[in-house]
Image 1: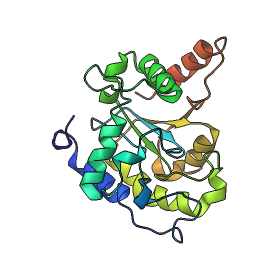
Image 2 (image 1 turned 90 degrees about the vertical axis):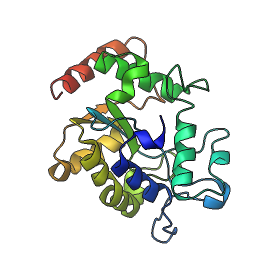
Image 3 (image 1 turned 30 degrees about the vertical axis):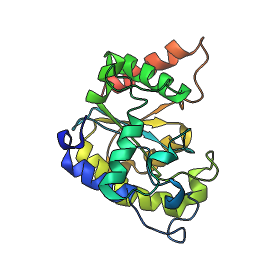
Length: 222
């Protein structure tokens, strides 16, 4: 999907976000290195509005070959490169170029089940983002340890994402994200539903039970 075919407000937000020039002094606890291809990133959408906004904690460390997409790029050029990399892992017959990671495999399977749609139709109904748009040196760092930065990202970018995507429900990947967003519920006024982070899947005995419970919660808001 070309940049021209999708929501201009969201693109303007992400062009600003991905080219964020705040220094480490303003963003304590994050790992951002434009020179070596580690910019803010870790979001994706195709359609507006959406039913579900999937929210993770941070983009994680760059995947193999990812940083090569970003070196020497800024603004819309950087955003376009980010989308090209994301689409390597989107489950679409026309765009999937790489074997999905454990995270992608499980997330897409969960969402297809929640929405009763094929995996290649998921992004007609969902958008994906992170509370922190930058990586952190420690991928497992708790949000409370980088409170100043996550509050700034929430205020500057996340609330704008909610206005643009107009989701019916937020799907929080992991307890840390769920806890943060539930504390913010008086501000964003959206239901927050927990799902175990897809990088650490449910046991085979519990997956259907747990996912069915989550599906019922999501369905009650759609």
